[in-house]
Image (cartoon, rainbow, N blue to C red):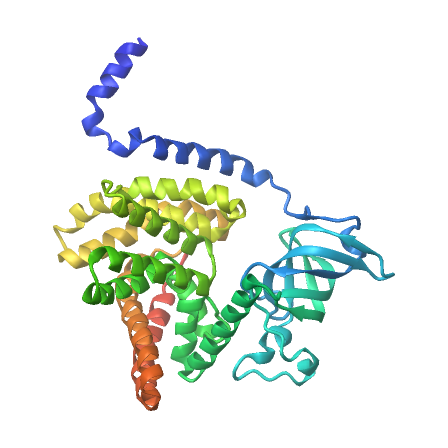
Length: 438
């Protein structure tokens, strides 16, 4: 019986997509099934660091920032970051070494003390602190429990701040200064600079609240969040210039270096790390003269590597949406495109098919996390995504021109803000369409 079944399955192979027979794809499916079967049972209130004291006893935490501070709605707009904890202290002065990491919320007046256009007279004693990845902090804080049961700490004051006097410490400080100066350049470009800052560095503190909410309500959050799209645009631009001055192999190497620089500058978000892994797999397969792997193989390999390197990412919305949307595009877009091509122009049918395929595969994740769907995002992506591409290219070109010819900055600012206004009107228009609530 089993032999006959396998024989029939083999005969049917031409009808079944070949990736079903790929060990890497099968391993990724099994891994995903195991991970998300147990994900719901994870106790989020458990501390992810170990020390001698309970969370209520801790009054000061000392450690290193390991993630970009991101502005949140919690605690009056505080910034959320993660700290690799080294020591903890209690009110009576007791000290304990610690191991692991903790979520820390830092008041905006501390984080933004050096930001352009921000002024907090009450935070003058905190001036000079650059709260970025790699900085060592010692903060007075108190334990808090979020609505979802997550245990975190809220900082009240920074007691100590420094970057280590080592190569990695100096490198982290250089990155922090680069991101601070990039904020200053974007601030000079007004509202358009605020959106460009979010698209290229994941810093959303200068993005208009109206347009930020409209991106979410229009089902376009994936465009505003750093993802493979932004990485491919940046890498593609570098590759184009690289081909003009060097051979293909050298141009590919330059592109990989540029991608590594972009990820280093912007930070390792789940979607960016997935895109980085894919770029490295394709680059090394080309370098070793191997047959170019198909998209499903690359995505499956990225998923398996990602789960090993950053296991904490698998429970985040960005991770699940990133992989599920790309899987939908790889599996369904070809079929949907053949259907749409009968009624639409080739480019339009391609954009619609990719958007619909991604929406179908991300629907279970979106419903389970947010209890709603924004179907208008399928159409909105077709119109907004090309404008965002143009906007990013204009921004990158504008920055280059500003470095070479600074006096042209006001003219470039006008042009970029015109494109920004068009994007804003389109996004607000699509955000007006109702969502499907569950």
